[in-house]
Amino acid sequence: MKRIFSLLLVLGILGILVTSCSKSEQQGDSGATTATDFKTTSVALPFSGYWLSETYFNDIKTHQSPQKSQEGSEDVFVVIPDSTLLPTMMVWNFHEGSEEITVLKKDDAYQLYEVVVDSLTRPLKDIKIISPSKIAIGNKTFVKISPYAKPNEKHNPLILEEILFKGKYSLTDGTEVEFKNNGEITGLENYRYYQPAIDYIGPGMQIDQVSLSSSEDQKEWMAFKFRGDTLLIHQIKCVEFDKSNNECGLADFGALKYTLIRKK
Image 1 (tube, rainbow, N blue to C red):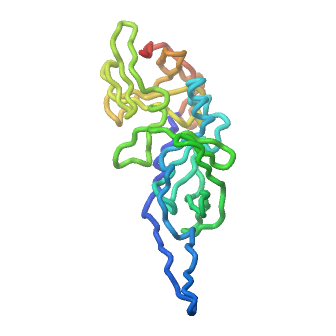
Image 2 (cartoon, helix red, strand yellow; image 1 turned 30 degrees about the vertical axis):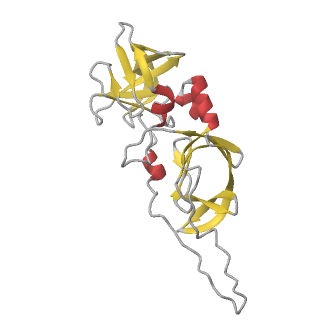
Image 3 (cartoon, rainbow, N blue to C red; image 1 turned 90 degrees about the vertical axis):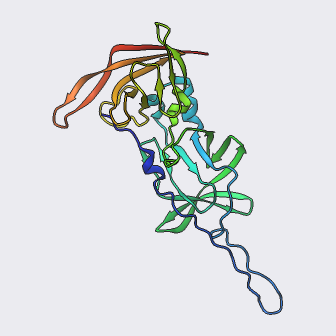
């Protein structure tokens, strides 16, 4: 029921920088040199970072529902490395990922290339820089985001924490609660961590869900919904339980547990 797409799969392939410099070669007495091979020459990328589909980003801002925003999302997230020739992956629906891809620069143009068995095979899509915060990959636009990632887990950024939950709230009794972009929470009883589900493909994932926990390895899953500046956290009610797989097949909102109003 709690199938959350782990971006460890997405960027676990990041590895050793592949570099190769072309060698000058004399041809007779002409003094001409061989042309630089863009497929083996590493150059810095001015648009490195975390890029999120603009469609998905706008849907989250409009509907405030990761479950709804995942519907119909295809190419949704990619990390552009610091240099060309480094491996990465395009994330689909926050549930699946592409084969290994890499960015190359030919003349003044950038392209995504498919990589098979450490060999560049074919160009996939052109990359166009629109602005410092927006690029186009093929016919889709992506916006740059700045999610938190642990120093040793740069491949696993906390996306929804940054673009949806982050902020200060107050409970109905006036208690201040803060959801931080690093997955920590303060002011909500003894809870110290939260983690919103980002992948809703699977049984029991019909509603938006977030875990609250006093330790990072003991998650208590609850349902949530935003209504403007108000965040409502409910218990999860299992409507249909799948005994054969010992899991909830159909989930719905249960009793309301917390009402939090975002501070402006």
